[in-house]
Length: 492
Image 1 (cartoon, rainbow, N blue to C red):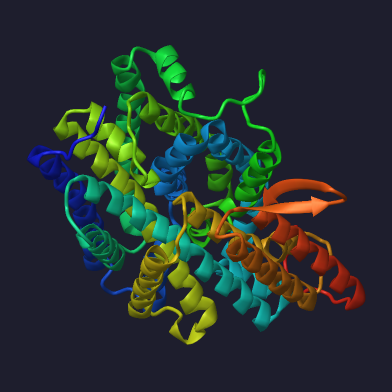
Image 2 (tube, rainbow, N blue to C red):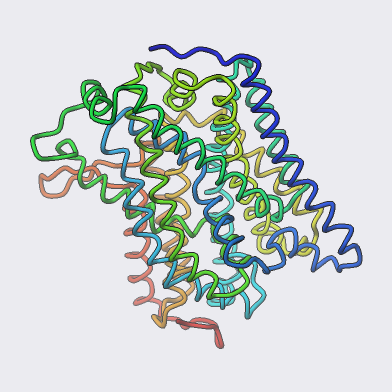
């Protein structure tokens, strides 16, 4: 079965829903600007970058879920499942692992940030260790790590616009400009307001897909049987091919540890009203894991539907155009585009907070500067799209994960009562980042590295390897150069 270019109804429906999202984000900023025209610059900056730290349970649930489940979920995961089969489902256990981590750790970080009026991870680290150099290192990691992740969102928007038939570089230009306008005008209130629209649209598209497409293909049994003919056959009784179990497990673990260290996910956490709000969300967010499992199966459905393409990012759009009527295809494309727009905005805002609060604190509380920084971050993400030759879109997210993982010791171990020194944390960050970056680019942006120990060869997550090197360096340097954290810093 071959896909076709959707007709005018698909384009009209897509524009209607996509433009509506951007307009709603702009409107909430204008309305709040009128009702709070007398607020101070400091309050205005916190309102733009952290929503005034007043988001309750439901808004936080949609916001955190909205920036956690992105084009990575709808475009990249099905593409990996389409190419590799069961291995692509590593994203499911990682979302299961991460929520106990959120329940235990994130309320502590929220309390530290609330008590100290901190807006970023680098603020928390500075308060804990009293080190300007370490603060800059953590801020730089967050800023660099989020760019390939935003690039993945741009790829998601570009992919559906390309599927609508727009030629050349127009889809990428439209994707960039729409994201830039949405973030500039709305601040964090824009994605907070529109995240529930995004989630509802994604749920409608996915539930329709997992219901209608299997029926169209003769049921789930026929669908799995057809998909199996196009994928590698693992040994009897196994879901994974030989040699895939360790990379599957290590990618899941490294992704889980990295997920809530990103500026955008941490921004959603710090914008919550209370630590209890974070705990409630950690209990409710696993509902998204069910959705992720359904979305991942779209990669198998594409095989059963006869979708063939060398552009793995186009798997889901091609599947929808092959099965659904044009008007509903346009709706599904809008859901994917909005699903990329909302989290990308939070990512850019989180990165802007790092620059104005930590890298250049003279710009603190300057909303205009934050907006320009967010725009610059999106330009960096655009460069990632153009110059990073990742085989799978998911590799961009995993590359960012490698870098943000190197902040784990300073941010998470730093809130414990273990006495690691600031020089040790800085040395661990530097060694882990340099080692991981070298290995990743040496391997061609692949997220796993072949580790050889005593004649045994095994693929392991590059990010997790770099984190082990990082922590090992921290422990050794702390023993050689003992130091205490900043007096009065909060510890768990």
